[in-house]
Image (tube, rainbow, N blue to C red; front, top):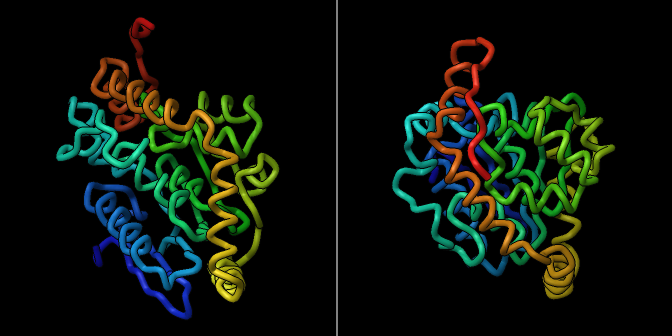
Length: 270
């Protein structure tokens, strides 16, 4: 885990850092595994009362690693060693689990986001209870640029934070949007120059209160937002399965890699 995630715990606060800055903290199979391992460790540690999730380097997370994107265009699975059609973690498959686990973690999670959070990186931030974001940070629901859909619990999480038409516009266009726009949409909790310092301070404040009350509060708040989540997470996987390796998905990847306008064929049935 250590070459992808750095996890430290101090005074009941867990500090989780994505540490692949040379690749913009992009999500490759080892990063997926490391994030899942970090979540598993925290779930088992009852001394932890709050978690801060952040990324080193220029930004939070650039989304799926480009090597995985090109592999998918060749018909490979998102994670070659994992069957994503299986619900391996409750409602979720493994890719969804690395986002959904932060909602299921029994203590509050604060994402400290700077620079950028694209695609899977944006979904990862959405899995937190709160998002503290630096001004100037850029976001994108990037999946449609590559001929895909958000499939890491993003469709469920977005709809509980922003208006439906906003979620649709951002998903259909894959356009970049600013931290300031994201605050207006409801994706951002606070805009602050040093989001990690602010997140750690808030986490310490949470950790100073009754851990039983905080855990109970999170259980209740989760109950209020999980209606139909099971069906939606399954639907995400099915839609992505149909897209991966299809002609238009391969063309989306190739056009982006060649910096040209795509030439798409007719749409898939359904």
